[in-house]
Length: 167
Image 1 (cartoon, helix red, strand yellow):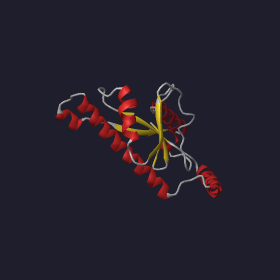
Image 2 (spheres, helix red, strand yellow; image 1 turned 60 degrees about the vertical axis):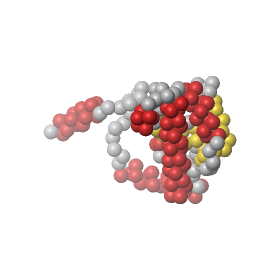
Image 3 (cartoon, helix red, strand yellow; image 1 turned 45 degrees about the horizontal axis):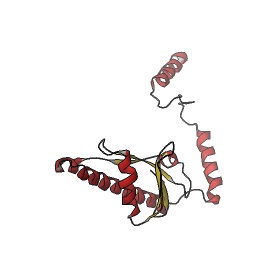
Image 4 (cartoon, one colour; image 1 turned 90 degrees about the vertical axis):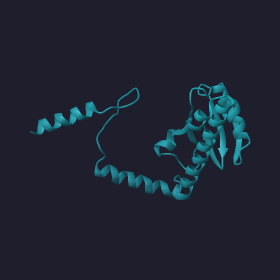
């Protein structure tokens, strides 16, 4: 009986889908001792001020909300400039997705936010580096705006209400 349950567990681990090039090292849930050590690590790090408080976390959410609204406005503007029908302009989508340490919930106090701008196919890369850059340039709260078009991963970097952002 014991052998059967071990095989069943292995089968469920094999069937579980994973993303990326390599498979996970382990799919096992943490043990009680792992939770204890995690809490000890957190307690040891707190005096060094590496964690954000609730107010700082909420500020990041507000900044991301503003950025997402800017992206939606910009996509709508680009759609109008490309003479799309008003019905299409009204329903066209677009969104900001976070990734990296912020998305994983492991960022430290003052860390930047890495974000991906997803837009419909009629919005081109040149639009992003021209008209979106211009929109950001005239936005209150944006500082240190710079575009790095020729990088391996092209990006616009800026500080938005005190939070560093890379899009």
